[in-house]
Length: 298
Image (cartoon, rainbow, N blue to C red; front, side):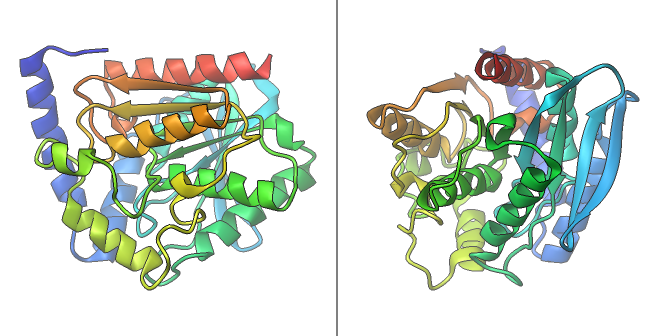
Protein backbone atom coordinates (compact mmCIF):
# COMPACT_ATOMS: atom_id res chain seq x y z
CA UNK A 1 0.00 0.00 0.00
CA UNK A 2 2.79 2.35 -0.90
CA UNK A 3 3.02 5.41 -3.12
CA UNK A 4 6.13 6.73 -4.90
CA UNK A 5 8.28 8.90 -2.63
CA UNK A 6 8.19 12.16 -4.59
CA UNK A 7 4.49 11.95 -5.37
CA UNK A 8 3.77 11.22 -1.71
CA UNK A 9 5.88 14.20 -0.56
CA UNK A 10 3.96 16.52 -2.89
CA UNK A 11 0.63 15.17 -1.65
CA UNK A 12 1.71 15.59 1.98
CA UNK A 13 2.64 19.23 1.31
CA UNK A 14 -0.73 19.82 -0.33
CA UNK A 15 -2.56 18.22 2.63
CA UNK A 16 -0.54 20.42 5.00
CA UNK A 17 -1.61 23.53 3.04
CA UNK A 18 -5.29 22.54 2.96
CA UNK A 19 -5.18 21.69 6.65
CA UNK A 20 -3.55 24.97 7.65
CA UNK A 21 -6.51 26.71 6.00
CA UNK A 22 -8.80 24.58 8.15
CA UNK A 23 -6.70 24.82 11.34
CA UNK A 24 -7.74 28.07 12.90
CA UNK A 25 -7.27 29.43 16.39
CA UNK A 26 -10.83 30.74 16.24
CA UNK A 27 -12.78 27.51 16.79
CA UNK A 28 -15.93 28.85 15.12
CA UNK A 29 -13.98 29.74 11.94
CA UNK A 30 -12.31 26.31 12.08
CA UNK A 31 -15.75 24.66 12.16
CA UNK A 32 -17.02 26.78 9.25
CA UNK A 33 -14.00 26.06 7.07
CA UNK A 34 -14.41 22.30 7.71
CA UNK A 35 -18.05 22.51 6.63
CA UNK A 36 -16.88 24.32 3.50
CA UNK A 37 -14.47 21.45 2.72
CA UNK A 38 -17.34 18.99 3.28
CA UNK A 39 -19.58 20.89 0.87
CA UNK A 40 -16.88 20.78 -1.84
CA UNK A 41 -16.14 17.03 -1.50
CA UNK A 42 -19.64 15.79 -0.82
CA UNK A 43 -19.62 13.06 -3.46
CA UNK A 44 -21.15 12.45 -6.89
CA UNK A 45 -24.60 12.92 -8.37
CA UNK A 46 -25.74 9.50 -7.22
CA UNK A 47 -25.48 10.55 -3.53
CA UNK A 48 -28.71 11.68 -1.85
CA UNK A 49 -28.69 13.54 1.47
CA UNK A 50 -31.75 13.60 3.71
CA UNK A 51 -31.68 15.66 6.90
CA UNK A 52 -33.26 14.33 10.09
CA UNK A 53 -33.88 15.65 13.60
CA UNK A 54 -33.17 13.16 16.40
CA UNK A 55 -34.36 14.60 19.71
CA UNK A 56 -32.82 17.96 18.83
CA UNK A 57 -29.66 16.42 17.32
CA UNK A 58 -29.17 17.25 13.65
CA UNK A 59 -28.43 14.20 11.54
CA UNK A 60 -28.33 13.22 7.90
CA UNK A 61 -28.90 10.05 5.96
CA UNK A 62 -26.48 9.54 3.07
CA UNK A 63 -27.95 7.22 0.47
CA UNK A 64 -26.93 6.04 -2.99
CA UNK A 65 -29.52 6.70 -5.67
CA UNK A 66 -29.60 3.13 -6.94
CA UNK A 67 -30.65 -0.33 -5.78
CA UNK A 68 -28.97 -0.90 -2.45
CA UNK A 69 -28.97 -2.97 0.70
CA UNK A 70 -31.67 -1.94 3.18
CA UNK A 71 -31.20 -4.52 5.92
CA UNK A 72 -27.93 -3.14 7.31
CA UNK A 73 -27.00 0.47 8.03
CA UNK A 74 -23.83 2.29 9.00
CA UNK A 75 -23.83 4.73 11.91
CA UNK A 76 -20.92 7.14 11.44
CA UNK A 77 -19.26 9.16 14.24
CA UNK A 78 -17.37 12.13 12.78
CA UNK A 79 -13.91 13.27 13.87
CA UNK A 80 -12.59 16.71 14.77
CA UNK A 81 -11.02 16.27 18.20
CA UNK A 82 -14.47 16.50 19.86
CA UNK A 83 -14.24 20.29 19.30
CA UNK A 84 -14.93 20.59 15.57
CA UNK A 85 -16.40 18.54 12.72
CA UNK A 86 -19.98 17.89 11.65
CA UNK A 87 -22.04 15.57 9.51
CA UNK A 88 -21.44 18.01 6.63
CA UNK A 89 -17.63 17.81 7.03
CA UNK A 90 -17.98 14.02 7.35
CA UNK A 91 -19.48 13.80 3.85
CA UNK A 92 -15.88 13.46 2.63
CA UNK A 93 -16.11 9.99 4.23
CA UNK A 94 -19.82 9.15 4.48
CA UNK A 95 -20.47 9.63 0.75
CA UNK A 96 -17.57 7.24 -0.03
CA UNK A 97 -18.83 4.76 2.59
CA UNK A 98 -22.38 4.81 1.15
CA UNK A 99 -21.05 4.48 -2.37
CA UNK A 100 -18.60 1.63 -1.70
CA UNK A 101 -20.97 -0.43 0.49
CA UNK A 102 -24.32 0.47 -1.17
CA UNK A 103 -25.69 0.90 2.37
CA UNK A 104 -27.41 3.86 4.00
CA UNK A 105 -25.14 5.86 6.32
CA UNK A 106 -26.45 7.93 9.24
CA UNK A 107 -24.18 10.75 10.40
CA UNK A 108 -25.02 13.15 13.26
CA UNK A 109 -23.87 16.36 14.96
CA UNK A 110 -23.08 15.53 18.57
CA UNK A 111 -22.52 18.52 20.86
CA UNK A 112 -18.97 19.86 20.68
CA UNK A 113 -16.40 20.93 23.26
CA UNK A 114 -15.38 23.24 24.86
CA UNK A 115 -19.02 24.39 25.11
CA UNK A 116 -20.10 20.78 25.76
CA UNK A 117 -17.26 18.68 27.23
CA UNK A 118 -17.33 14.99 28.18
CA UNK A 119 -19.80 13.23 28.46
CA UNK A 120 -22.00 15.27 26.04
CA UNK A 121 -20.91 13.41 22.87
CA UNK A 122 -21.42 10.02 24.61
CA UNK A 123 -24.96 11.00 25.63
CA UNK A 124 -25.77 12.12 22.08
CA UNK A 125 -24.56 8.95 20.36
CA UNK A 126 -26.77 6.94 22.76
CA UNK A 127 -29.81 9.00 21.65
CA UNK A 128 -28.99 8.33 17.99
CA UNK A 129 -28.53 4.59 18.69
CA UNK A 130 -31.91 4.46 20.45
CA UNK A 131 -33.46 6.27 17.48
CA UNK A 132 -32.14 3.56 15.13
CA UNK A 133 -33.54 0.85 17.40
CA UNK A 134 -36.95 2.63 17.38
CA UNK A 135 -36.84 2.70 13.56
CA UNK A 136 -36.81 -1.09 13.75
CA UNK A 137 -33.14 -1.89 13.22
CA UNK A 138 -31.66 -4.52 15.51
CA UNK A 139 -28.25 -3.93 17.08
CA UNK A 140 -26.87 -6.60 14.74
CA UNK A 141 -28.12 -4.65 11.70
CA UNK A 142 -25.84 -1.69 12.50
CA UNK A 143 -22.15 -1.22 11.72
CA UNK A 144 -20.55 1.69 13.58
CA UNK A 145 -17.80 3.62 11.81
CA UNK A 146 -15.71 6.48 13.12
CA UNK A 147 -12.67 8.54 12.22
CA UNK A 148 -10.18 10.09 14.67
CA UNK A 149 -12.20 11.35 17.70
CA UNK A 150 -15.20 9.65 16.06
CA UNK A 151 -13.29 6.37 16.37
CA UNK A 152 -12.83 7.19 20.06
CA UNK A 153 -16.57 7.86 20.37
CA UNK A 154 -17.48 4.63 18.55
CA UNK A 155 -15.28 2.57 20.90
CA UNK A 156 -16.38 4.28 24.11
CA UNK A 157 -20.01 3.92 23.03
CA UNK A 158 -19.70 0.16 22.48
CA UNK A 159 -17.98 -0.10 25.90
CA UNK A 160 -21.03 1.71 27.34
CA UNK A 161 -23.49 -0.65 25.60
CA UNK A 162 -21.49 -3.56 26.98
CA UNK A 163 -21.57 -2.10 30.51
CA UNK A 164 -25.37 -1.75 30.23
CA UNK A 165 -25.57 -5.39 29.00
CA UNK A 166 -27.27 -4.28 25.80
CA UNK A 167 -26.82 -5.94 22.41
CA UNK A 168 -23.72 -4.78 20.54
CA UNK A 169 -23.49 -3.69 16.88
CA UNK A 170 -22.47 -6.11 14.15
CA UNK A 171 -19.04 -4.55 13.71
CA UNK A 172 -16.76 -1.53 13.99
CA UNK A 173 -14.86 0.27 11.23
CA UNK A 174 -12.23 2.67 12.62
CA UNK A 175 -10.19 5.12 10.54
CA UNK A 176 -7.19 6.59 12.41
CA UNK A 177 -8.97 6.19 15.77
CA UNK A 178 -7.80 8.34 18.69
CA UNK A 179 -7.84 5.80 21.52
CA UNK A 180 -5.50 7.18 24.16
CA UNK A 181 -5.83 10.65 25.69
CA UNK A 182 -2.77 9.96 27.89
CA UNK A 183 -0.65 10.07 24.67
CA UNK A 184 1.46 7.13 25.81
CA UNK A 185 2.21 5.83 22.29
CA UNK A 186 5.71 5.95 20.76
CA UNK A 187 4.42 7.55 17.54
CA UNK A 188 3.94 10.81 19.50
CA UNK A 189 7.76 11.03 19.53
CA UNK A 190 8.60 9.19 16.31
CA UNK A 191 6.20 10.96 13.94
CA UNK A 192 6.64 14.56 15.08
CA UNK A 193 7.07 16.73 11.98
CA UNK A 194 6.09 13.84 9.69
CA UNK A 195 2.31 13.99 10.23
CA UNK A 196 0.99 16.80 7.99
CA UNK A 197 -2.37 16.97 9.77
CA UNK A 198 -1.88 16.72 13.54
CA UNK A 199 0.64 18.12 16.00
CA UNK A 200 1.04 17.85 19.77
CA UNK A 201 -0.10 21.40 20.48
CA UNK A 202 -3.39 20.83 18.66
CA UNK A 203 -3.95 17.47 20.39
CA UNK A 204 -3.30 18.97 23.86
CA UNK A 205 -5.81 21.73 23.10
CA UNK A 206 -8.45 19.17 22.09
CA UNK A 207 -7.84 17.18 25.31
CA UNK A 208 -8.22 20.33 27.43
CA UNK A 209 -11.44 21.26 25.59
CA UNK A 210 -13.11 17.86 25.96
CA UNK A 211 -11.65 16.26 29.05
CA UNK A 212 -10.08 19.06 31.11
CA UNK A 213 -10.08 18.06 34.79
CA UNK A 214 -11.12 14.46 34.00
CA UNK A 215 -9.15 11.29 34.66
CA UNK A 216 -7.71 10.57 31.21
CA UNK A 217 -7.45 6.80 31.86
CA UNK A 218 -11.25 6.64 32.06
CA UNK A 219 -12.15 4.07 29.32
CA UNK A 220 -14.99 6.33 28.15
CA UNK A 221 -12.37 9.03 27.43
CA UNK A 222 -9.45 6.74 26.48
CA UNK A 223 -11.09 3.54 25.23
CA UNK A 224 -7.65 1.91 24.98
CA UNK A 225 -8.00 1.26 28.74
CA UNK A 226 -11.34 -0.52 28.30
CA UNK A 227 -12.13 -4.23 28.44
CA UNK A 228 -12.74 -5.52 24.90
CA UNK A 229 -13.89 -9.05 25.74
CA UNK A 230 -16.98 -9.87 23.71
CA UNK A 231 -16.46 -6.95 21.32
CA UNK A 232 -17.83 -7.26 17.76
CA UNK A 233 -15.51 -7.77 14.77
CA UNK A 234 -13.38 -4.66 14.24
CA UNK A 235 -11.40 -3.28 11.31
CA UNK A 236 -8.77 -0.56 11.83
CA UNK A 237 -7.09 1.59 9.17
CA UNK A 238 -4.14 3.85 9.99
CA UNK A 239 -1.44 5.73 8.07
CA UNK A 240 2.28 5.12 8.71
CA UNK A 241 2.91 8.90 8.98
CA UNK A 242 0.51 9.56 11.85
CA UNK A 243 1.28 10.92 15.28
CA UNK A 244 -1.63 8.71 16.38
CA UNK A 245 -0.32 5.54 14.71
CA UNK A 246 0.38 3.95 18.13
CA UNK A 247 -3.26 4.50 19.13
CA UNK A 248 -4.24 2.00 16.44
CA UNK A 249 -1.35 -0.42 17.02
CA UNK A 250 -1.98 -0.59 20.79
CA UNK A 251 -5.73 -1.01 20.27
CA UNK A 252 -5.07 -3.85 17.81
CA UNK A 253 -2.82 -5.61 20.36
CA UNK A 254 -5.34 -5.21 23.18
CA UNK A 255 -8.16 -6.54 21.03
CA UNK A 256 -6.12 -9.58 20.01
CA UNK A 257 -5.42 -10.29 23.70
CA UNK A 258 -9.20 -10.07 24.33
CA UNK A 259 -9.88 -12.57 21.50
CA UNK A 260 -11.71 -10.00 19.37
CA UNK A 261 -11.91 -10.74 15.64
CA UNK A 262 -9.81 -7.73 14.65
CA UNK A 263 -8.02 -6.78 11.44
CA UNK A 264 -5.73 -3.81 10.79
CA UNK A 265 -4.16 -2.25 7.70
CA UNK A 266 -1.29 0.24 7.93
CA UNK A 267 -1.17 2.40 4.79
CA UNK A 268 2.42 3.29 3.96
CA UNK A 269 3.14 7.02 3.65
CA UNK A 270 -0.42 7.99 4.56
CA UNK A 271 -1.53 10.61 7.07
CA UNK A 272 -4.36 11.05 9.59
CA UNK A 273 -7.75 10.13 8.04
CA UNK A 274 -6.30 10.17 4.51
CA UNK A 275 -9.57 8.51 3.38
CA UNK A 276 -11.13 12.00 3.22
CA UNK A 277 -8.93 13.04 0.31
CA UNK A 278 -10.22 12.54 -3.26
CA UNK A 279 -7.45 10.26 -4.56
CA UNK A 280 -6.82 6.60 -5.42
CA UNK A 281 -5.50 5.27 -2.08
CA UNK A 282 -8.50 6.78 -0.26
CA UNK A 283 -10.93 4.95 -2.57
CA UNK A 284 -8.94 1.71 -2.21
CA UNK A 285 -9.15 2.05 1.58
CA UNK A 286 -12.91 2.54 1.32
CA UNK A 287 -13.18 -0.59 -0.82
CA UNK A 288 -11.38 -2.46 1.97
CA UNK A 289 -13.88 -1.05 4.48
CA UNK A 290 -16.68 -2.31 2.23
CA UNK A 291 -15.09 -5.79 1.94
CA UNK A 292 -14.86 -6.04 5.72
CA UNK A 293 -18.50 -4.93 6.12
CA UNK A 294 -19.70 -7.45 3.49
CA UNK A 295 -17.74 -10.21 5.26
CA UNK A 296 -19.35 -9.58 8.64
CA UNK A 297 -22.86 -9.08 7.17
CA UNK A 298 -22.97 -12.47 5.46
